[in-house]
Length: 149
View 1: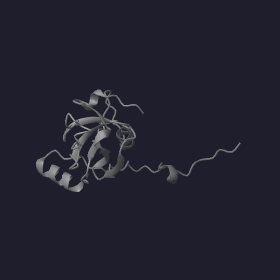
View 2 (view 1 turned 60 degrees about the vertical axis):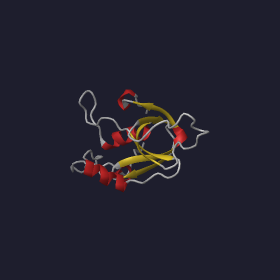
View 3 (view 1 turned 45 degrees about the horizontal axis):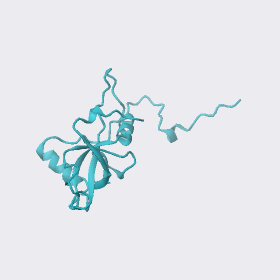
View 4 (view 1 turned 135 degrees about the vertical axis):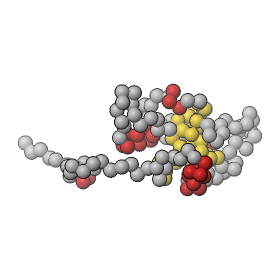
């Protein structure tokens, strides 16, 4: 019997004793100047589209285990909860489709379909562009929604 070992360069495993690389993503700023820079860097949705930042949750489990960047990225990719960062100029303007007005607003957490929208990454992490009618619900506390992997 022959045991085949994978090429470690292909699967991202290193046998060296070097520490793991730091995350390449930057935290989203909370100070006014940092927020302004963040809004300048990210794309601006056009038309009836929304820019949503998927909720990634805490970086540490209840038991105190720190999550790796890969685990956090998986959670962020598979989540159905996100923060509305920006809205296009035609969002919720169709009175026939939205007779009661907008379903959500900037700064609000929303729930959307797992495969909805177009995903892309910036130096601040993953974002999605969704159509205004792809919002399923709004939520006050995103941590109340459990992740399904």
